[in-house]
Amino acid sequence: MICYYSGMRKPSPKVVRYNGSDTSKYAVEGLRVEGKRTRKFFRTRQEADVWLRRTLARLKKEGEIAIHMPEQLRVEAMTCDERLRPYGKTLTEATQHFIAYLKSIERSCTIQTVISEFKVSKQQDGASISYLRDIRNRLKSFEDNFRDRFAADIQPSEIDDWLRSLNVGGQTRNNFRTVLGTLFEFAKIRGYCASNPISRIGKAKVVRGEPGIFTPHEMQRLLEKAPDTFIPYLAIGGFAGLRPEETEGLDWSNIDLEGRVIHVKALNAKTAQRRLVTITDNLAAWLAPHVKDAGPVVSSARALREKTCRAANVSWKYDGLRHSFASYHLAHTKNADHTAHELGHASSKMLYQHYRELVRPEVATQWWQILPPEGYANTTPYTGRNKRTNT
Image (tube, rainbow, N blue to C red; front, side, top):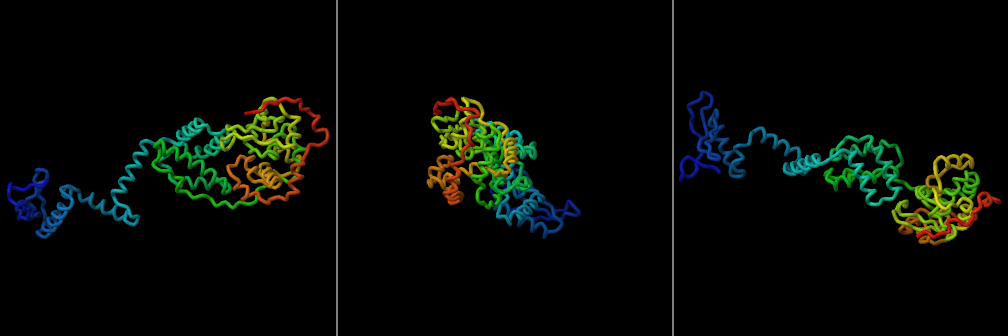
């Protein structure tokens, strides 16, 4: 509150002559701020008049803080305001944003810690083994590059540069982006960063071609040239349509050959939902000599795959077994809902987009007639084990 010399008189701050200085001949008197006398000295009367007029205007608008505000701070505020103007932001908004950033830094932690907590949370949420494996593999490379950085301090441009440095296809880059988006959303919820930087990073454009599938002749060659331990993997992928990670996590106890179903457990399924997949006649024929009561269906799938492809002189196609199943099953049954159900899809939309009319019905018939060579069933005869129904 501003006070003046006499109690009842109207405030009258004014410029007066000052004789106590050779350089400052004029002074502004009559102002008291918080009970303290305030006096300002000037070389000329014009300078004093200008200062008093501006000060009284500021006092009317801003209060006593106008007198106390250092000139350097006023200049800085004006400069910052000018720099913010092209962005349509005010000093108040800038201050609020920076304070929020500082608070997030105080609560933040390193990317290594965030990733560790994130993986534990996904395990606690019951994520599938395949999903946990996927986020572990994708986040390892990111952690190697940003291990000791605070989550709140990593800029979208840095992450975008890192994604582009992977030198992978558009879909793979988008898959990395999706995992990172989930990671930073977790960090945001935990208060480790104020916002999710992935939301400001665009997706790569993906031009989808026809899914790669094996011809009936190629599939026959692969099965005939494969080591015995790899035949179930090929047959299940091609004739039941399981995802590679689902087959790799499959146990013989999940296969009911007599009941003609494969039980894909939620723990191994990409969608984290259990499903029963039909065992067709030709799949049963290929599995019969190998079936056991329990134990992994396949191990070292990658090494066995490479060995089989060399022996059969067939090039491997990415997710080719599942794509082949979808294509031939849809062409053979002409029932998209049925095919989608076997694949574990929520709808038949993807089938119509990618698999419809991809193969002719007569070629599809050949696929489901791919059978073991004569004498194959006698190698390890099926004795009727594993007859229980999995529920």
